[in-house]
Picture (cartoon, rainbow, N blue to C red):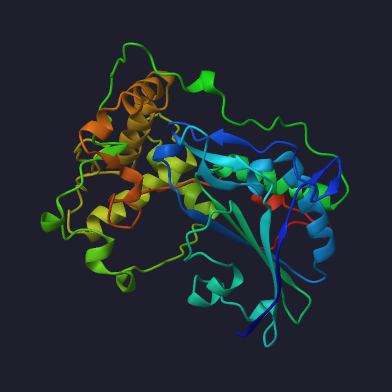
Length: 366
């Protein structure tokens, strides 16, 4: 697949002075204590729109309007006046690349993850200050892909999907959704004085790095990127219904998410030679032995419930703001972002409305 880059530019938000007019005073949003231990890496989604695809002019017009409401997506990562990590609301703009595929149609693209798909978005290997980088790629059949890359530290899946839906609405000339754009609210992230550490955070959100000479052989660098296999599995609706019924035989109606994770977890432990018992070694889940899917789902359900409450997050804020992590030389565990550390990470996009991104010709086909 041959791709020709047609143009590259920054699209700035519209203000009272018109598209691209700079804000009167550059502002900044400090990264919260949660942001500072989250993934600081680009996350990319590629949306495919079959012919007749939306016009790139309408897409850019909508982007100008959406960036005015979601200014963080037009900003840069940097530091505030006091030196703290922050998102600079300086209206630098989103980087927009327009490209064309000269020798293929959208139907020729592989449905499985392949290196070819990397050509449909830009700059992933670079350390970007820009929050958002976009690539609009037109195919000879009239289809279009939209490669959307944003830094995860600026917005999570919910905030990003809100922006995408707002972008589509603006491209269609519709008014914005009645959703308040919430930035950093200091009162939400205040530690207690004195701090009260009710949970273990040193081995969950943080870890103690080994000295360079004693680095463990388990990890991305030890095995190399060439040994990582990307596999896409499709679980049918009927399979999931049957799996949930099997897992819920004990009377607890486990969710789809809990059931699927339990199924994958058991499969992984068997593949690693742990036998049918499936011994869990994930730090967050204390070593447990389960013989069935409902045992695994129960462990997952109970452990998630322990951390999914206000007390846990308040304890984390107390620890993260106490200075103990810096004093003890701890690092954020999110830097262990490969497939071997931690043993398993599961992210659910079930409730994100990505398929509601509509620039005027309907939602994406994939």
